[in-house]
Length: 318
Image (cartoon, rainbow, N blue to C red; front, side, top):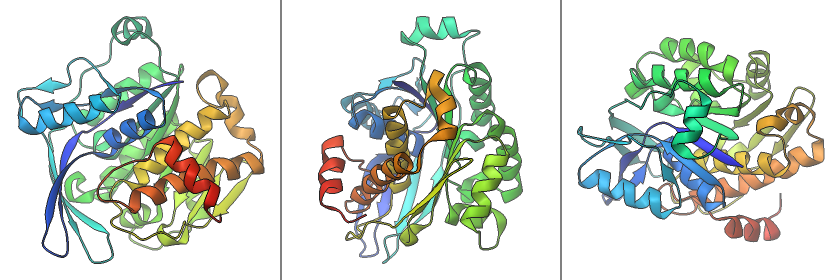
């Protein structure tokens, strides 16, 4: 299984409640790409960053994880930055300085194969890259090219501080969802969009009605619910000491993609997404929840390896 991830890479400046600060490579799609690579998957990342010190840090981090950068990633503009202020509960509030621009898709999938050497089994999009213009329009053109050939996953990962109005994000979602097979969303994000408490079951069924076949709704400390058109499974969050929640959802997304690939329901085998058994749905969910738990137990967006997930899975009570 090979994956193409499209979206932002940036530097996370993490400011903690105790006054300390650190700088980490970040950006939701980049985190997903690195997470997939750490799980042993072939990954191409279509992103952008500048030819500057921050960009050099990103390139080193991405390539050292085993992720291949799509040609045209580096440009003359400054590398994007996100400032994450962490409260005493470990939750981040964000401020962004982001340049959203991505390489246009080739005219055909044959040309894409010439560029990266293969046709991706799966494509992941989300967060700022999927919603901030002008880059979001380019992302949609990539979906138009690839949705018939690869499964598509999407995590809204809402950041209204940079994306603007909730309605503009909702409008974008209505254009994105017809291309999408897999959605992962948090109740926190959905409540920010709607302005009121969200029922995870109702939200999942809205995504399914819009065209998705597999939906995960994360509920913070209350755990995660996983849905197909015919089944649903609820899993609790693993109890770990939380350092911060930066990148936890991205680690869960990487683990979901990996798990679904392992049960052969991605790419040409996407029809199987609709008929995942309850036991397999539980297995997929446990792997994803465990990956997220490991990530919140350490600083910054630092997704786990397969061995780390399997080790905790073997000892955890889920």
